[in-house]
Structures are given as C-alpha cells and as structure tokens.
Length: 101
Image (cartoon, rainbow, N blue to C red; front, top):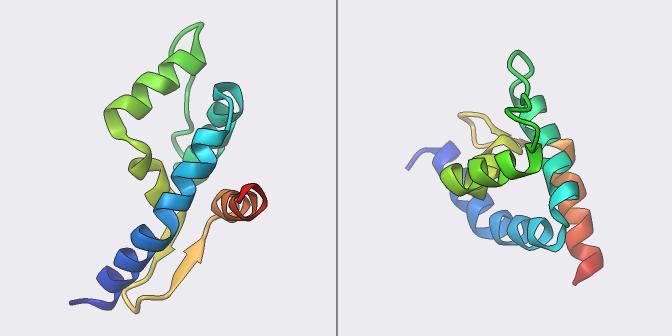
C-alpha cells in the first residue's frame, strides 16, 4: 500500500468522525460559511458561487449529493510520501471538537 493511501486511511478514520460532529453542531448559516470557505480555499480559481436567492438551501442540496466527505478531503493535502498538511478551516474544526467534547 502506498504511503499516501495509509495517510488517507489514518485521516479518514481519525479526523472524519470529528469533522462530522463539528459540522453537525453548527447552525446551517454558520455551516454554509464554513463550507464555502473550505471550498474556496481548495478551488481558488472557481470559488463557490451562489446559485439562487437561497444559498443555504443550495448548499444543503449540494451536501446531499456530494456528502461531507467531499468537503473533508478538501481540508487536507497529502503528498506521495505520506506527509500531509491540514487546511486552516480543518484545524479550526478540530479545535472546536476539543471544546465541545
């Protein structure tokens, strides 16, 4: 197994459950802002665009199609060597997890 695969296995086992706890503890307007920022930092050339006059509803529908795992993966950069970098918003989520537990 590749080192990057082992790192992703660790990240998804250790961090993903915590990420979901934090997101689900947020109200949708706060969750919307958080997910937009995470998305925009991962896609700087194509930032999240408001699709209608109800952006939170649009985000809810996007999450329903893509799942939170889609956003979770945006929170990390994993090198072939297995080393990883944690996105600032993901660090905030883990700090929040420690406070709400």
